[in-house]
Amino acid sequence: MNIDVLQSLMKENSIDAAIILSEENRRYFTSFPASDGVLAVCRDECVFYTDSRYIEAAKNSIDCCEVKEGKEQYKQLHDLFKRNNVKNIAVEESRMTLARFNNLTKNEQLKEFGFISDGRLDTIINALRSVKTEREINYVRQAQSIAEDAFLHILDFMKPGMTEKQVQLELDYYMLSHGAEALSFDTIAVAGKKTSMPHGVPGENVIKSGDFVTFDFGAVVNGYHSDMTRTVALGSVSDKQREVYNIVLSAHNAVLNTVKAGVTCKEADAAARDVIKSAGYAECFGHGTGHGVGIEIHEYPFVSPRSDAVLNAGNIVTDEPGIYIPGQFGVRIEDMLLVTENGNVDLASSPKELIILR
Image (cartoon, rainbow, N blue to C red; front, top):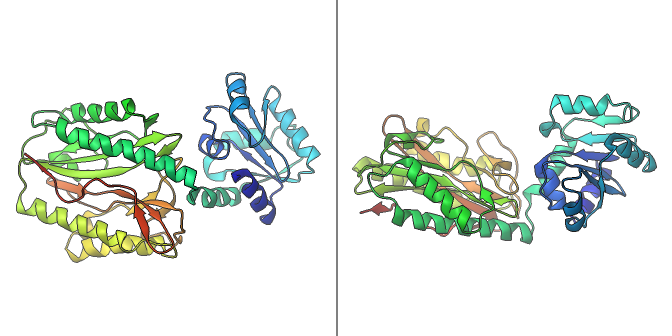
């Protein structure tokens, strides 16, 4: 179990206990979604505390640790730590507010313990979460399948004269009505000149013949996200649109041919960036080439020019280069790649060659 591995890594990193408060990490370790909860992990004991709204469901769902109602949470934590001879307690440095940290460290019940806030726990959890189990991979595949069906649906649905917002809402409705428990993020569906904005917001802009339309969207299944982007054309394309599209596709494929266990994130990013740079569009690609996907839509590892992280088998990372020409148009193509020892598995099956809807 994940908690067993965490406890072992805590020992290796001189951590007596950990307090996990973030919703994402609590769900990762317990598989239980809740807006309230404290997961307290000692080297030989683990307890999940929650309030009366979730206690019955938590007891019925969680089998990896003891579940208790947190009626006197600080006292309960104190007693747990004392009986486990805890001297220090690690917290999620990157996910904890200063106010919450002060509440913990200045509480009378907990002031006798030392707190570790040096990022040690974050590093351990990020590494654990980045390597997906078969169960996690299956959830991501299911989420991706819903998104791909939605994409095929929207290709039949979208017509010139519709607004970006109409198309976005149809895409969202399809995913939510076909098995998604939630959307991965606010869906992007932008057309024409707005495609030059990587995170453009859908609005009342009318989609016209000759426009590029960029979709960036995903579904959530059992807490796990999918993420894909496609750029399609309506009616016709100019020579420049076709040229830029094919450059982005070449950059995307260069990453596909590079990603495998042992490759650094910086090297994977360079595979795409070098293609775009050699084509004369270096200044039109400002974001990183990809990021990890799982319980969160953006998680470790990050495929960027600044990351020396090494890819491991079991990582799921996006491959999403783009070219964005302000005032004209933009193109982005994105799949999720499951890293293997000798390469990767593309989790998307939707076509990537330029689609022109007539």
